[in-house]
Length: 261
Image 1 (tube, one colour):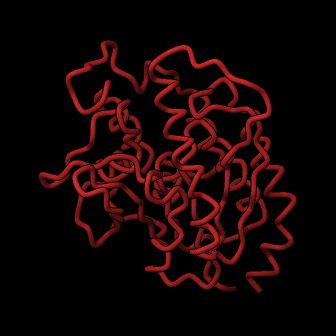
Image 2 (cartoon, one colour; image 1 turned 180 degrees about the horizontal axis):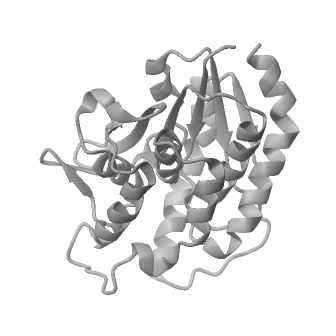
Image 3 (cartoon, helix red, strand yellow; image 1 turned 120 degrees about the vertical axis):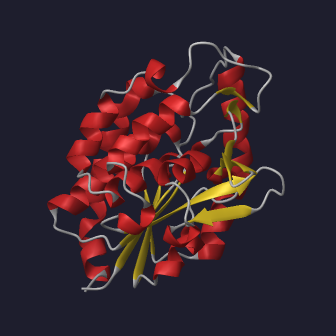
């Protein structure tokens, strides 16, 4: 069978859809050889590469509460309102403290250099702590403090590569499948606080270039998950997103099997 690379994107709480999709691959004994992720996709990809099954990831995700990842008192005088200590402690357990050269599946994640604005990809050759690399990929600007690695500051990789398709090519997969969980809005929303407004700005900026990047980087197959009216912070909709990802997996599994022949 051909080598399969999976690309998981930057979509906050919609990462639940990624797990639903991966469950379908797991149920059909589809072997994943490498994975690239950005933002929440870096967490899911890292967990999978570290040996977690989709069922284990789903169980862990459903237990997450806001106080598990956010500090009690935001600090407006730092590079972001919340520090990343709680998040790093949480996610480090997902791959049992392994580093990137110890993973079961080849893995890389995308981050953005806060100083230069350049895309940076961390992999096993980067020789950095995996939890720090994944956290760098997840640091939503203004919300989390920028992650410092080797005296450089990094923020969310989704700013430069919502779906880091080119990044996964370093592993030479025969087939690249990108999971697109970008959602559409069908009803007007009210943004009631600074955090929700800032996140919406992030979504607007990314949406302008999302399709263009997909067209330019040309994965072999894009699986589009049909998610409506779900913000990136709506953890109350985890089940909805998971079900949508699972449905997308079922709808496309025969096409995926055909690609891998």
